[in-house]
Length: 501
Image 1 (cartoon, rainbow, N blue to C red):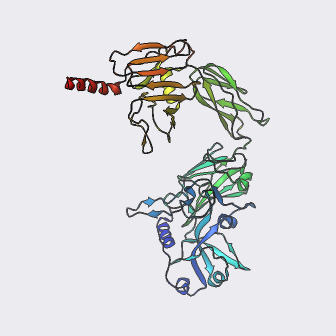
Image 2: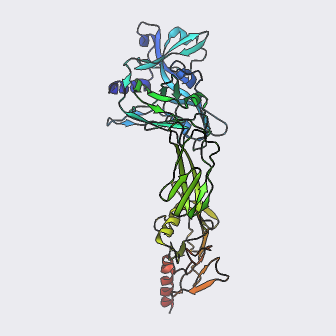
C-alpha cells in the first residue's frame, strides 16, 4: 500500500507547530502552510456532487463530542488510536452536550490572503509542507476551501463493502474491510452510480473499524438518543454505492468497484402485537407497506410467518424479533420486537439461589434466569444486563451477595433482605424474603388461600418466598431450604453458648 511512510511524516508535521518565519516555510513563494478549523460544509464543498450542505454534528452526550485527540505512531511502530472524534473541533452547548463543527486540517494559503482574512479559522503555522492540504483562496475577506491536494497520489484500497438497511445508528450502515487503519479519519465520501456524493462526519456517521452510518429521513434518532441530521443524505435512498473514499492526513484512500444498493425505506420499525407463550399466533401492522413489497418474515425456530400473521408452537416466554424482508429486494428489511408471556413462575428460592419450581422443567428455569431484567433489594432497584448489576447469576441462579453497584454494596451485610425479581415474558414478579432471625421457611402462592409453612431442620436460618403462579405447568412453589450462606452464623452461635457454659 502507498503512503505508510508519508502517513507517519504527515502526522509528525501536523503535530509540529513551526517557530520559523513565514518566509522560511514559504521558500521564496507567497504560499504558507498551516492548519485551520474548517467547518464541515466548507470542508466538503469542493469535494461533492451534492447541493445540500453538510451540517455540524449535534451530540447529546457529555464527553464523546470532546474526544478529539489525534492518534499517533507508538515507539513500537504500532498505531495508537486517538479519540473517537479525532481531528475535529467543537463548540459547547448549554444543555451539557455539544457540536462537532468540522475538522482541523492542513491548508495552503497565500500570505497576503491570510493577512486579509478577518476570520483566520484558527490558523496555526506548520513547520513544513504537508502531504495533503486544502488550498484556500480569499475574496472580499471570505475564505473558500478548494478540493484537497494529495501530493503523494490517491491510494487504492483493496477490500470490500457490505450494506445494511437496519442499524442502531441510522437508516443505512456500510462496513468497509480494508479501510485505512493506522491513521485518523478526517472525512469519508460515499459516491453513488446515480452521480450524488455524500460527506460523512465524525461521531454521527464515521465510527471505528470501517463502520459508517447515516440517517436518510426515516429514523429520527440513533440508539443513544442523538437527533440524526438527514437532509444531506435523503436522496441516497434507492441509490447504489460504487466508491468509498477516506480522507486522512496523507490524502485520499479509495475503495472502488463496489455495488452496494441502498434499499428504499418506508418505516423505522414494525408494530407487532404481544401474545401468550406456548402455542398461538400474533399479528403485525402491514398497512404502511408498499403495494409491491413481497413479504418474507423470519423469527426463529418454532415460528412461521404468513401475510401479517406470526404463528408459533411450544415457545418459551420472552422477547422475540421479527425481521421482514422484501423478496424482490427493492425495499429495506424492517424489524420489530414482541413479547410472549405467562403468569407462571418456574423458579423458587432455595439455599442461596433460584432453582426450578415444583413441576417446572430445567428449560423453564433456565429461560426465566436469562430473561431477568431487574432485581429490587429492599427499596432499591438494580437493572440487569451488560451495563447493569448482576444480583442473580443468569446461568446458575445464585444470589450474588458480593454484588456492587459502582462502589456500593448491594447487600448491607445484615442478612435480612426482601427481593423482587422481574423477568421479560413473566407477567408477575417473584418476591422472597431472607430472614436469618426466623426459624421458619414459608412459601405462598396465588393458587392457595392460606400460607404453607415448613419448619427448617437446622432451626438457624429461614427464607420466605412469594410466587404468583396460577399455571399447572410450573406448579406451586415448594418450601425453601435453609440458607447455606447463613449457616456459619448458626455454627458461631452454638460455639458461643458452649464457651459461656
